[in-house]
Length: 235
Image (tube, rainbow, N blue to C red; front, side, top):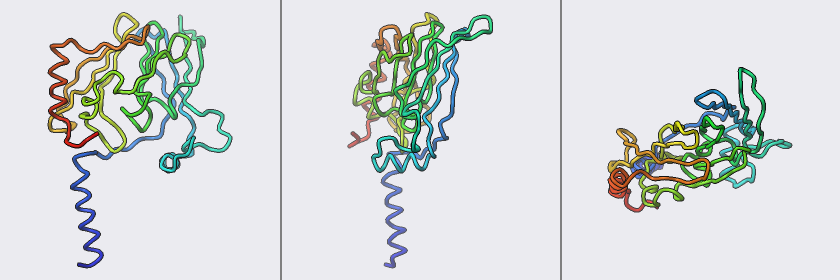
């Protein structure tokens, strides 16, 4: 068999082996984002850490560099957050702090009381210690969590995934009490596919950093489905 044919066969085998395990994904460059409370009284601006470019970031990550994608003399080594309180159209700064995310969180929610919760790391949804970070009223971290800290490990293993990320949640929403945020968590499908995913609400109390799973009549069927859907050999 000619070398070109051997390479073609190897590529075909690789595609067959890896296709069920991970879907392709792309990430746009992180940009400054604003998040407001439902009543408009609180506004959070998140500025990402400067990168020389996405390709430089990915290359440096592979090489294990301490500040991947960073340029010489960069002032900030993490994302930064600025919280403002707005009354009658006038806004004043309440706090400005470094956030825990290396580049930027993927999303955030601000409650009517000015509390903040952020989700995931740019380019790595669902992985790492900053899957969920709760900040107090002064902008200091109250609690940071990886997924296995509030979801069973086998449940996390069964979640659908792409090359870089886990698809673990829908769009979070602040509850009316101003202190809790509900996150629709994906119920893994036995097929392992993205389509037709169900969700169950996991609630985060931003005043105490406490997590509440759904009631048993909702959670236990979801957990059972996740265990049925765990791919063999996945860790």
